[in-house]
Length: 115
Image 1 (cartoon, rainbow, N blue to C red):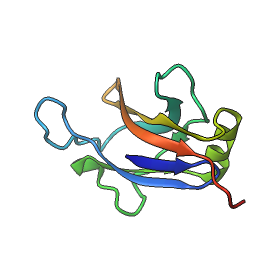
Image 2 (cartoon, helix red, strand yellow):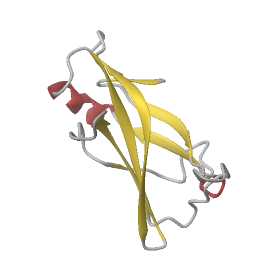
Image 3 (cartoon, rainbow, N blue to C red):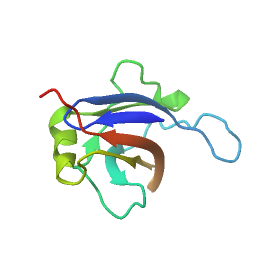
Image 4 (cartoon, helix red, strand yellow):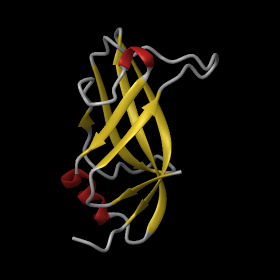
């Protein structure tokens, strides 16, 4: 499982696929893809939303490859919710063809010791 350290940049690859067929989900042409961090029960949003870019190195939106890039100043706000290590979720919302679809990936969220 991926790990997000509070106050660090969180940069990870997310491979989006069709849940039924396993085929890569072509998200090119999406109006937006937004990322945030939420509690494992999805009841609490831990930080502000970040709009992702198809220009990030490694992105291939046509091939379903999205680079989740949440900056350190945004992950730093999670410290108001977590003081140790907990499970959470990276939530992505894809807005394409007038339809919003949300997908989630589990993540460990932990505090760091270096400022």
